[in-house]
Image (cartoon, rainbow, N blue to C red; front, side, top):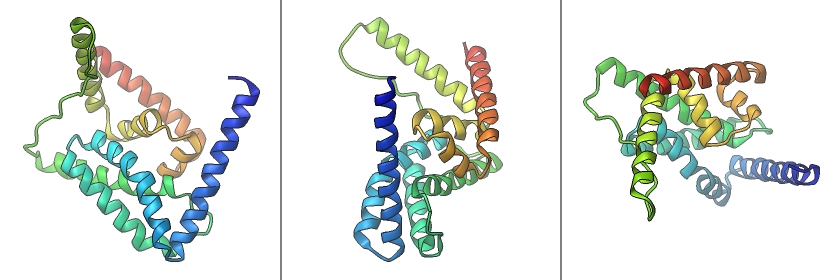
Length: 195
């Protein structure tokens, strides 16, 4: 990436952060349109994250609703420099981890979600292979400990930056780097074992 492209990306990221800070401040003051815009921006990424952690669509919808309910109830008591995205992801992640703990404790009867493969025209052998790899990745991800799975999903699929991950996990960035390395090593080993 060229320096000018990197500078442009950094400028766009700062602009998004500034806009998000403005929206959080407006929401804190009771502005319903700001709350609606925050919900619109984060509802789908939160749903994807919750679904990937829980593997259940209904449970993921419930987590999103509960995360926003809790966030809106507490937003008036938050600090001025609140970055909404890491905060709402932290709430949702905690709710997911709580549900996973309850599931594990009570050995829920819910089935394992099937890995979704891309569909569309093309070579049937390539489609089969993609589906097979997606199933192996889903199996490896499911076998990965929840703390690593959470980090992998937030970084690789939701594309949170290291600073946002540090805020979500309430850890220093250096610890996030180490834990992410361990998570990648763990899922790689699980993937190889699944093959």
